[in-house]
Length: 387
View 1: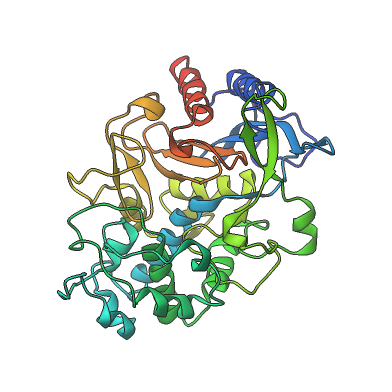
View 2: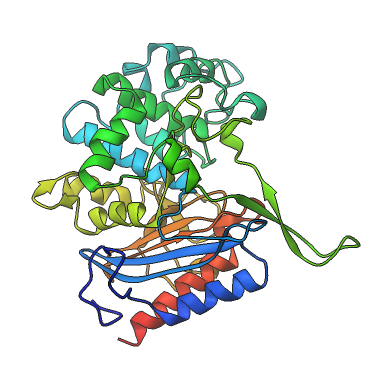
């Protein structure tokens, strides 16, 4: 597959960049309309870059332009990486996604339904949002210093429904799964992600905690303010909730497996490429083929899942079953995840292509259904159709 004429793989910053003009034009229009401050868009094949474009600003007030290596809070795009970590441990025989969580976390034995009925929650339930586990109150959700500490707090909460019977998006479940990874690997989750995902993939700017150089490249977050008596439609700076008022450098918070990672378009593109290559990185099989299959195979049956219609859930990933609305242009079987502030990654095995969208807007009515994401997908698929 090649959408553009280019022999490039990863850019050295000097060669001409491949570009799909329709994607670039769509993103430019959203910037001009003040729907977003800026965007980095990337399309990759298994071993190639097919499109990259950077438009708009990282700091509106200072008029600082976005760069290709600008760092974004990717929020729930962390979840597929967590899924990969869980499945790595399964590949090594250290767990099974069908194991009860009490096998690794004895404190979870106190989990019960509101009426006191006992429950059996598996790792699969955690990773597909079917566990029924409750959330901590907003103000205390991200203040614990470690996953071990926060998991003990989760164990005190009631279970909302019989595990496996319903779908309810669960930050608690994903973080509990990450705590299990810590237990079976003997590593903190942030160190596990760094050593087992980021290092072999060359994802040098993906981390739960940024260093000083990376902080300089972190984009501001904005929310859209509609036109009113104070003036026309505009962008206003916003905050990142998981930081609880701190900065991305602070380490006094647990590595939030549900949405704590910061990354760049190129870094996340490398993760997507690994999945397109059935888990392979060079000569290394980072994930087994069967593990990748579990990340793209719906295992929630006919349960209705969110946040947009026509989807099901696999291990750590949303899977498009029946394209419609925001996903109408993508291929059935496309899988991936979005983030609260508008980021998105879709991996399309049928067309052997993945798309990565990096934006940073806090108040989309539904970031999973945003017109920015839809326009990106439609422009890409139109380009594929012309081939």
